[in-house]
Amino acid sequence: QVQLVESGGGLVQAGGSLRLSCAASGRSFSRGVMGWFRQAPGKEREFVAAIRRSGGYTYYADSVKGRFTISREEGKNSVYLQMNSLKPEDTAVYYCAADPNFGGSYYDTYEYDYWGQGTQVTVSS
Image (cartoon, rainbow, N blue to C red; front, side):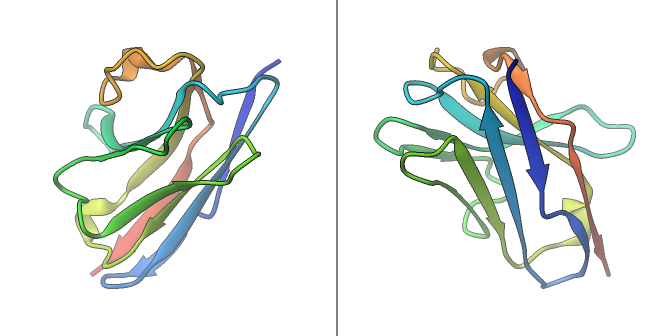
């Protein structure tokens, strides 16, 4: 059974930092892609960042480029999201997602087969 478990969310003041972690188990994603999405109350789930396991290519939403960094740990099914210079508009539930076979649409929720349960990130002004 495939599981994605996120951790690292919390409450932080504007300008602060948080680091999210996602540990995957149950299958390998070495040839796929892992990503982070977020969903604020009353809004659709939106793409934040993604990383291809092979080659380490990274992709970011314009709204987080230069502030967030996605990374992976070699040899492990883990992905991280370092979030700096956080803003109140970053407040959302953050979800880890994984696709064992990269289809190209890293920004689309339909690309991903597996999802974590989500972790709350709240940025106060």
